[in-house]
Length: 216
Image (cartoon, rainbow, N blue to C red; front, side, top):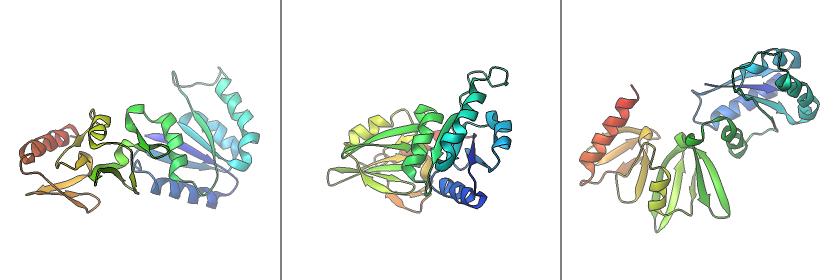
């Protein structure tokens, strides 16, 4: 579990920020947030956290005190422990959250997806599928759908070491989003249904069962 602290002056505002962050990420089971309006209390528990996220208006006044904690060899820390110190301004958006997670999540949990004009970082668990429509590959995530500059082959290569399946010629699907497989249909946890190729039905079902077995 990633443990994070939110620090600011207004408890109600921090509670809203916490709620917004949890709504924008699929890692609710991995993220835990504590709220601090008293800096002394935060300092006492600082090394319990992976991230400490500070309100913009306080960030530069608070930073020296927290950096002193980090450099103090007399304070017990986990071996190799790093704490991400960062700031926020409300409302918090998905891009800002992704930037934080890039520093604390294992790199193999993140995807860098090329899009027109740059790249977009996604948590692997947020990506539901890649779909080729009219020679354009779209990325369907928990919260959005957008156009990438990938080919479907490149999408397959991008996620080749993870639990993604190719159930139909135009899809690369994250197996963890499958709710059930019935006949020639795959029902997803977001209530969508995508087709299952008859030729691939047997191998897809077998691969899905193997993925499920790893979770137990």
